[in-house]
Picture (cartoon, helix red, strand yellow):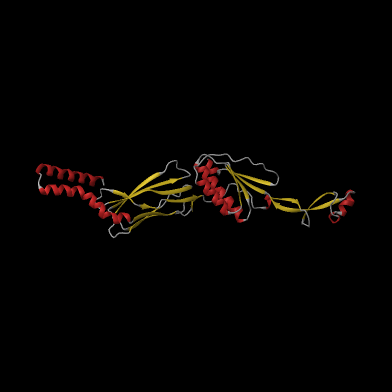
Length: 317
């Protein structure tokens, strides 16, 4: 475009010099023709420019290293397309990149065209693509005019699953405890001295005779401990990736077994009851700048099982 403007400037200067040097009738009209040439070019280009539109589509969330596609579609409603489309695309990983990067595209004389991008899914985060500007040039390539565009597409690169080493037993019998059952019977019992108000049918008569005092069989109910996953966010990205992939693995195991858990993620705390809740929480985390945070303190009793997720050994070494 710059070269064409230089050529036009030289043509205009030559026409002006010829007119002032000779002052003839013909040179006068040549100078006027050269002067109004850009205006004429814009006027005949307007139908193509006004019916042009650029849209950006795609943005389906994927797990890390999986393929993703973003489409840039250019369409002109006039049978003669503009001479040139100038498109400026801004892309940014909201989790990792402090500043967005830009990519400039040039498309010549296309009525309908689709460009496909393959985002980098090797790193976690929310990838945002935005059409910063879109312009079409007249047929002489001297003037560019803004055209319609649809602006924003975002996709989230979610963590894959990594088995913790060693793997905690969060869905095994070891994460259960016995609690007194208010009423009824149970295969599990606990023996204790008789208290006022205990039912007569709960008395263990043989043991009562042996110890010479009433002994009661109290029914016990096997209940699951409250599970807390605690995540410290390290500063290093590789370690954060390891932590998040372990968290995804453990969350998947718990949600598959319909086990709710409390997630302490840095300074955030949320109860997770399903895979959908965990994915929404993770998308929120990955759409904000990466930061280092210590997890909230956990006050754990006998009925609470706390597992602190740290980077696997091979990552830390």
